[in-house]
Length: 326
Image (cartoon, rainbow, N blue to C red; front, side, top):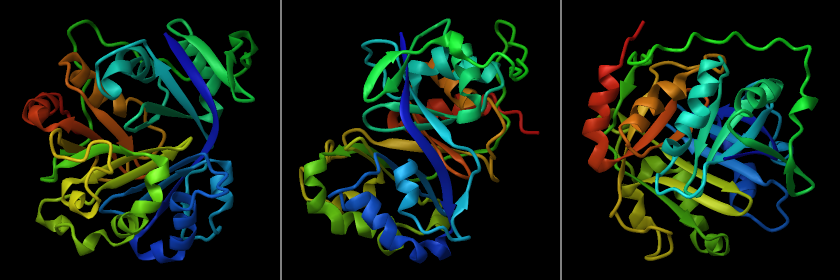
């Protein structure tokens, strides 16, 4: 198995709904105007509570440094893990090899699943602890001038104390879910778009990104406002409400029908913060054990997992059985 440490150094930010007009022009440039764009990692997610942005060093230079742009203080490193060919979708494949070991070692993470792959984000200051935790299970590589080369684990800083290891759960004991869960009525599509087709859907994406209230149900009616677009190394991934499908030209999306719809489980009633470890593991571990496919998207305030519609009842029953809300 291989663990890749990508070259991106990311910044995590939040914008309230009432402040989005201050940043619309800059976000359009980052997301939709690809000519001469230097930002190679861009993620934009709308939720009912606001907008989450994840961009690299070049991306943050394009944004006005206003107080309305709330920033999380760390830089984040991007990890991509591969355990070889697999038919398992999303985060399920790497839960046992990556998510659980990091949780057991008290290392907080964020997760960003895309149509193409799953990314694990760790704080830069924790990188050597993360590698030390995972190197017994992976061949570790890092990006040097665009080429993946072996990472010298012995170069890790030795005088920094490791985070305290959480006592591993005895066999047969389940990891408790400590945050509230909610499953809105929406149905979602996880899909892709070829980068050369982007100009054909700019007006559609503008409507979805900034004017979703014009065509989506009111969140107070049991729906959750959620849309995510990630453009990473010219690969576009979309998570969108099936009610938005009609806005796109027929056949332009990678999967443009409702043949495989997904339902959401939202994790957390209030802001989850960035220090607590194990949140992703609490959700992904039982689903992986049950062979339920999942995608997982962390945002500034909450986490969200997407589960095939056919499995949602089974998944909710399983997750609710492990809830132990403090």
